[in-house]
Length: 112
Ligand SMILES: O=C(O)CCC(=O)C(=O)O
Ligand SMILES: [Fe+2]
Image (cartoon, rainbow, N blue to C red; front, side, top):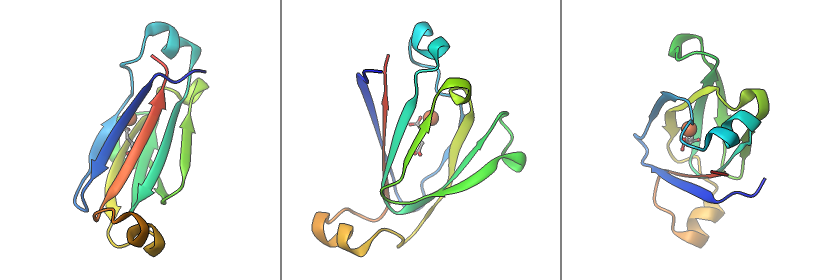
């Protein structure tokens, strides 16, 4: 793939993102299952995912600073979101070196 979009989200420590599908890319990109490549920086997040928009039954995984999550192929249309940010969980060296404010930065690369 050749990513040509980067969406940058910053979550404060009270930030959240409801369950959704990423469907704004072109029909061809979506039907080929070209992946969303997601980089997490800063505080960790409780990330939810599942095959339905159902918070109660969603799977949960903690994404930490430096983690890269890729969802493509059959997983390209999963519902996903951020349930919470875990305050003070960013690596100390990152905060000292970058002075990143409290919260989480997420970058997702996609191909339109
Ligand atoms: O912050 C995240 O890990 C997910 C972001 C996301 O789902 C999006 O930008 O569409
Ligand atoms: Fe998304």
